[in-house]
Length: 144
Image: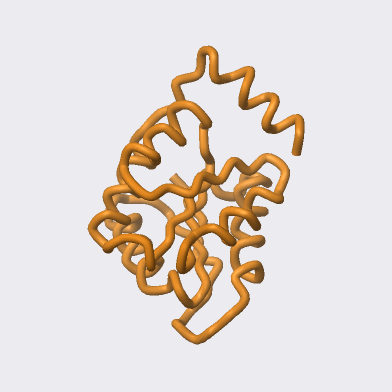
């Protein structure tokens, strides 16, 4: 799977760890930055990653910040993006099963690295349930 990754300075450390994890798992990773822990403005990196997912250049995207809130907000401004801010494995599974989330937002300051990697793994390996959820996805996408 081709996966976009992006972060601001507050999510940089975990972005690098997640990127390595994804590559070891055989995924193709497109890193939209940032490239260090020096302070930056997250929309400059998150928006291009979300646009790549929306255009189909990447199948999914993972974005990170200190809390993950602002990053999810930026991504969700893009038509066709359903970015879930997740804080545990269960929230990640539900984001895929019920919402067909094509982007995942994580807060580096909100969890340890082991939890972040477990969330990524669960999110990548959980399928969309379809069924009754399809009409809801259409409504989400129609309102964007």
